[in-house]
Amino acid sequence: MGHTNPNNSRFRFCPSCGKNSLEPDSIKSFKCGQCGFQFFLNCAAAAMAIILDHQNKILVTVRAKDPGKGTLDLPGGFAEPGESIDQALIREVKEELNLDIFDLEFFCSSANTYPYKSVVYPITDMAFTCKVTDFSQILPMDDVSGFRFIPVHDLTPGMFGMNSAQNVIKKFKKTYS
Ligand SMILES: [Zn+2]
Image (cartoon, rainbow, N blue to C red; front, side):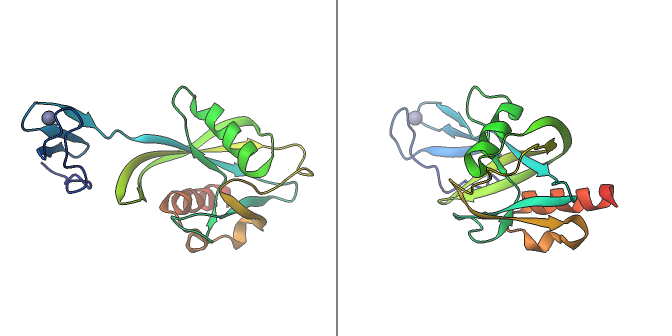
């Protein structure tokens, strides 16, 4: 196996037979040595929004929760079961900032991990440029404690707590300049 399962010591008990015999059998799966039950920890889909205001400043949020509490982030979050990735991003930006986005265009994607309560989740991050007509009703809510508009040339990846946002900002600065 070329990669180690990052959760190899976290999942031990089989949800089917209850025995302490669950073993990682790939980077993303576990198999019970007793009953053969198998469990896959597949990639979660996550979306981020690149939103520019009328002065070409990027809208960034401040994370209200760990991981990365207090650091800057891009608006967005995980897709719920049954959602498309664009539906997820529209919902997340509404929940976090009370803004309506439209004209979503794919910008880039990267693989990532999201550690949460001692489980390492594999993530497929997708970033979209999108438009907002009216910023007057902006209101930080949910897992966002604040927001800022920052000129693109003033942004540095180090201002962001999460690898996902750092990757997008690096690529966007290259493309934009
Ligand atoms: Zn079992």
